[in-house]
Length: 480
Image (cartoon, rainbow, N blue to C red):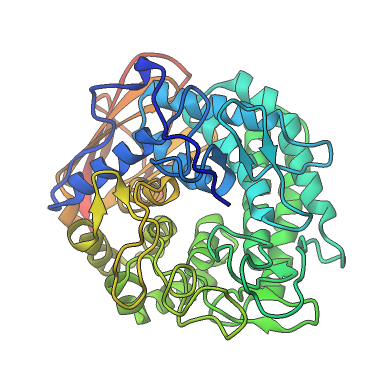
């Protein structure tokens, strides 16, 4: 999988910005340091103008789809305008290699000349993540020309995923393996279940990301006046309905279903929490998922924060040893959807304990999180500065714990924040503008440049034209 060719080097000096982006001040001890280390780690993976290596040392060389997805999810919140530009260029680089049938490469070298592709039916979530990255890059930068240029590639990808449905239930099917897993698994999806599991045939992670990508592209098309928005939205709703009927166990979403029809009810933390974010989990399902997280709080959040799964895989279903790597280990990318899901379901006490655990007792280097942590001891793995882990954590911090959000041309701001985080300040670049945010204990009001904003269910929505004038958002937060 890896190609240890070269360590990354920042070629363009404009990437280096002395200003602090992302979180700058927090009332919770250790959180500023953790954020700074993760943000530094993301910046240090940049190689030239169009690449983030998957880790700081370039062990995983070039652009990798799922690594970039989580890295971008957090990196756009904590990156300078020049760093945001690297993500735009990187996605253009990827788009040139999207094939006519919608197949997306899993890795591309920094110069963009060489791309690597999986066998059919492998890592289908990575394809959907390309679409999600295009939409999120447009939402954060407001670059309409970028969105229009990459729209055809996005449509090809979603049409290709639709063709992966072989049994007529609208859900894409992956490949199947015969016999126990001894190395790389079936990998219908990889993002939350890992690349060492026997997640055969009908995999929930694939349906999850496919549904999310359909929703995202539908929204972008509607905002920009591109055709097909309603059809994409209708397909998204149909996929969600089918996935709920197929995978919901009464308490959570099952991990996968074999070609034989055997359902594997393994709890995969990232899959279930991401389903809360997208609405794949309806309100009652989201509550059940949050109940499981709270019931298993010590295992999932405290002992090893960001644990991939509950328990271990059955013998033969994963090539990792129990409690190691994807078989019960902890991957900090999972802390992203965990924070957002806990906030969305109002589990504030649990979220507060989780964020405190991350900020004060998680081993990190100056380059951010390590690759994986042992599920029993919490000992860190050998590689640090992992793009996906650093980005995943910052994604959850900004959109879950601090309550920011993006939806098309709109930024949303929640008026309820953990009291342990207050006071907090942060800075981001949105639609070409520097946005300075400040949270302090208050009456729940939110202002934009000192003008009060209307709230709907405690959330303010801000829509501005792309420009250069800075914005100042003040949140008189209700302590959660």
